[in-house]
Image (cartoon, rainbow, N blue to C red; front, side, top):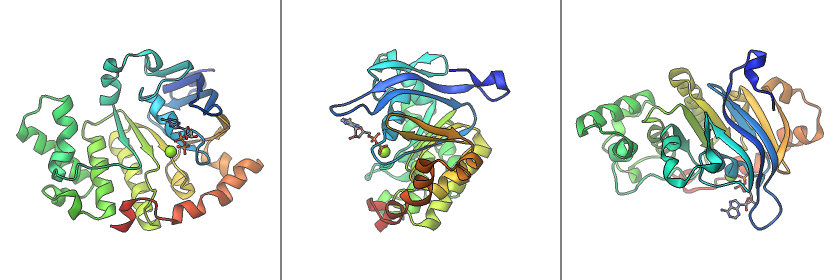
Length: 267
Ligand SMILES: Nc1ncnc2c1ncn2[C@@H]1O[C@H](COP(=O)(O)OP(=O)(O)O)[C@@H](O)[C@H]1O
Ligand SMILES: [Mg+2]
């Protein structure tokens, strides 16, 4: 696959080359080629079960492919032993669907957790970094609360604070708006955009939420049958006459978006 810098576009941080992944049934990824441009936001779309979450896990070595190459920067992720993956995970922030906070720990301790694991900062320095991160997200007053004392939207922000507290060069979002109403979904979209302006991470957003996709994407990728069905800018998608793309953009997302699917919706 041609590297993008040849065309004046940013180079890739993450690349997949002819990646095959299956579990028990039919292949989930069937010869996937994908380039994730450095410093940009790539949105991965696709029907439920298309392999979007699997794709994110492959990027950071939480799963291994049967064959193919996966690179993160210069590193061959698909070949790295588990103990060497810490480096990639330290450079990457995740906001997963069940962005679970530790219930018995305060917001401060939850957001400090990656700092305890990966840095030698002392308690005062950790607290300062947590405060700065919460301020960025507009929730510094929540520092001493417990998760049970937070609303769903606040919990999302705290999970996001924890994801960015190490100032990762890469952010991975897996269905970040699932279970949120449209107003809170819009807040998440604005947070993703704000982080992009402040921290310039390479971002991958997996979502069913079409409005979110159009708000944050530099590039969009539609995954289907284990491969890329279409990739391009938001304009190319919005004007596409491809029937699969149209069906997906015009109809697919509605029910799932509106239906609360996790406990956060109740908060
Ligand atoms: N750890 C696993 N073990 C077995 N099957 C899995 C595992 N993870 C994902 N799958 C299967 O792989 C397919 C793609 O899953 P996933 O990536 O979660 O889809 P989605 O696009 O909805 O995120 C599904 O059929 C799912 O059941
Ligand atoms: Mg998924």
